[in-house]
Length: 155
Image 1 (spheres, rainbow, N blue to C red):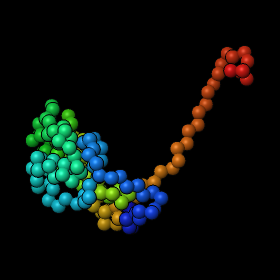
Image 2 (image 1 turned 60 degrees about the horizontal axis):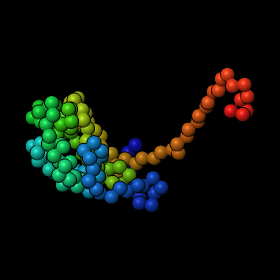
Image 3 (image 1 turned 45 degrees about the vertical axis):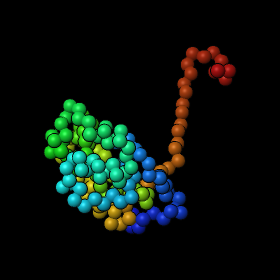
Image 4 (image 1 turned 90 degrees about the horizontal axis):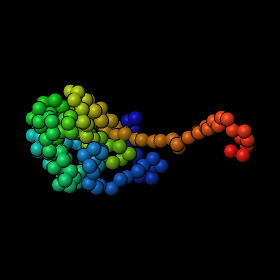
C-alpha cells in the first residue's frame, strides 16, 4: 500500500537494512531510487549506475554482464531499463521506497511494459512516502491422523 508519509524510524514496522552488496536476484537497497533519464543510458551504463548505487561487487556486475542464451542487445529491446540477462532480460524498476529505505528492484521478465509499469506505480507511491509493509504473526496448525494403532493414547 502507498503511505501518506514516510514511515518514521520509531514506527513498529520500520525495518532498515544497511546497504550491502546483494546478489542480482534480490532487491537492492540504494540511497535514492530516483534515476531520471535511466532509460536513456546504454545497458552497460545502467549496470554501472546500479552497481554504484547499490554497492554491488565485481562478481555481481560480472554476473549481470554475462550473456547466456539471450544477447543483451536483444534483451534491451524486450524490457525497459535492462541491466543484463538471466536467460530472460533483467530490467530494474526504479522509484521504490519500502519501509523508509530506497530500492531498485530487478525483474527477470520477457513481457514488455512490466518494469515500466512497476516503476511508474512506485513513482506515484513515492510521492506519498512510498510503501509500508506489515505482516501478521505466523500461524501454523498441524494435524496428524494415526490409523490402525491398537493403543492410540500410547502412540
